[in-house]
Image (tube, rainbow, N blue to C red; front, side):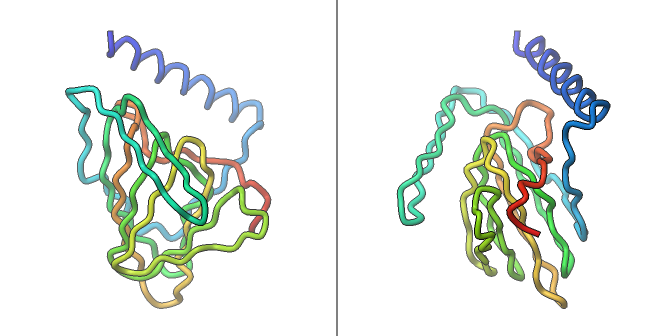
Length: 169
């Protein structure tokens, strides 16, 4: 039953993507300066897993996934001046900055005030449609980020390209 659902999801996603491209409805931003984006591991849960994060950024945000699908671990290296392009993730993601500094911009922040994370720091992205862009503002140093994505559909990418929200550069 799961494999049939998976095939239907892939067909639906492919049809929607083709319609967007052919209809010109969605204009997504491209990544630039991505040196590496290696997926290091991917696995599905054998048991039903309920994932919940509580993040306090001045007000508490609860990020909840009631039946997490696949979990994906990715190492991303961004060159000086590079960025991820606007995107979201199917589910929540935990990002750890290994080297350098990464500045994260939120698509729903009208002031476009990025938040910078340095080596040794981590953050949680809510995913589930939260559009954002990450940039390496350094002119000399790569940034290396390790990300664990939760609730990725089986076989799908953990990155969902998004339209430019128009609030930033």
